[in-house]
Length: 284
Image 1 (tube, helix red, strand yellow):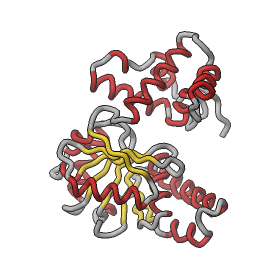
Image 2 (cartoon, helix red, strand yellow):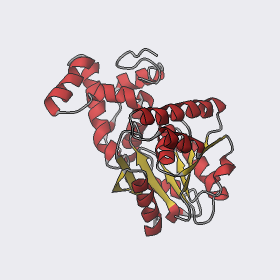
Image 3 (cartoon, helix red, strand yellow):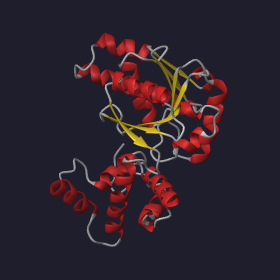
């Protein structure tokens, strides 16, 4: 890419992780969020994350400070105009992402690559919102971004080889392992993961076992590091529901129908770890 610079639009959980990893890898980072509270939260979260890496010896104190100073936090989306790579990490809602891609297309340089951290939404559809569909690509980081090595890189129907090469290089520069996938609802990761989580919720809903029992079976019997219900709490039950709805709508297959318990919990605001209550309770 022309310069080692990246803009991250959206400073929620995923955006903060991307910002931290990119800054620690030597990128100049433009961190954008139009909500001041999210922007302030990102400053504190990223600084805390970099300091923790310094405590663990992953960075020196000087490197942690330099990494944080390489980040520009702003509420102005226009600040991303000069970045060769822009990563969208806003809420997993189609209409919001479509509107943002139209906006980014209008302000970003003609050669800029526009990447989405979407976990399930069509890259082809997002690319169609722009006049540069060949430069639109999926760059799906895993949660928590600072710990997870995978980035799922998704080509839309029109994505060209140059955009793919730029994103693969950026992933490797961040110390991540990119794995390519083609555009399909849920891609690889969530097409496999979400039906498992949904079936675990159905097991709870139907009284087959307690949340702890379901998770313990998957941990001890299937060697999963985390049970599916605890993982759903970590991801966010609203996000799980959004992804399942994309799968259900995209494939028209009843096997992706969200469990009524998941729908009810999301509606009640029991979203998992971020709200303090999901399948388990979390103290602040």
